[in-house]
Length: 302
Image (cartoon, rainbow, N blue to C red; front, side, top):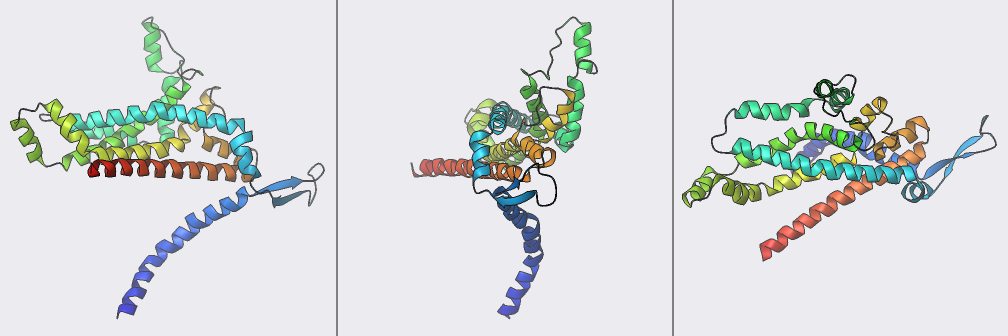
């Protein structure tokens, strides 16, 4: 009987295991294989047998990490993008969640939908929307500013383009993170607030000393998701690129992967860069979680 139960359980797991193997495990293994290969060109590279695939070892990784200024530059731009986006996005998400959960807050349903709605807009559409709002010739905001005699900044200039891209991510990401934090706030027993009010605590003190510490795990989760999304930014700069000359084809690491694979037809270098990005994402995520767990464990022991 137990044997049949075990076989039935494996049968239920089989479709998920097959899909995982075909669409996740095998592509990862194939990308690792390609990252260790390269093309050897004979002569002018014309004719049959002029281009052969050979073993490259770690040369693709060495080139990506040391000898490729485009990749290193893209990492620096994404780091600045993350420093601008993540703290601002999580700060606004926490602020909106606290305001919606505040005592006496009105129109909570409408406010939740209004804040969350931009998250439902696809990144490409959101980028096109904001891209036309950034262009001086079609932007209604810049038109009104010009009619009023105010300065009309070029938002897509080299100086401001990182902030322009971060604004798109901010507009779309605040709502999701706000919902996560607000859901955690709704799980706090109301008796805890009543006891604090009986002790004379103000609403601001309750928010700072009770609500924020309780939703700290949700803040950690949203920070982790935001960090991963920052490392994988692609749609926003790729969509804005035809509208300005300040966004290069290697503005972000994933854009460099796209250029190498589909413009230069160098899938081997693209595979190596993809593996580097995946490993960096894993290391940063795992390191952040270990750091948070270690600090939480030390606080419990103290």
